[in-house]
Image 1 (spheres, one colour):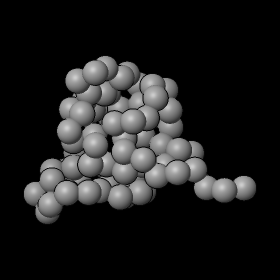
Image 2: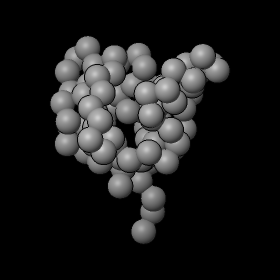
Image 3: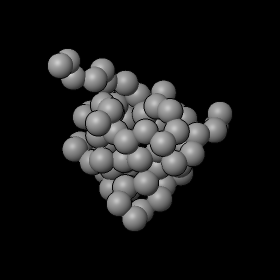
Length: 78
């Protein structure tokens, strides 16, 4: 069985469960994303998807992400 492809979080459909595999961008972007609790290995569920961004949950924490930031978070479906 082949592993699922790696793609930006911005391209994931609503209600998908994914794992963060890479954070792209500079040190400031990576630090900002890490401060939100989104680290490599984190499991996320996409709750809502809109044209301007999406809402994800990590455990009990709910986060709203803009499409630009979500494009820097590379994920793999579980």
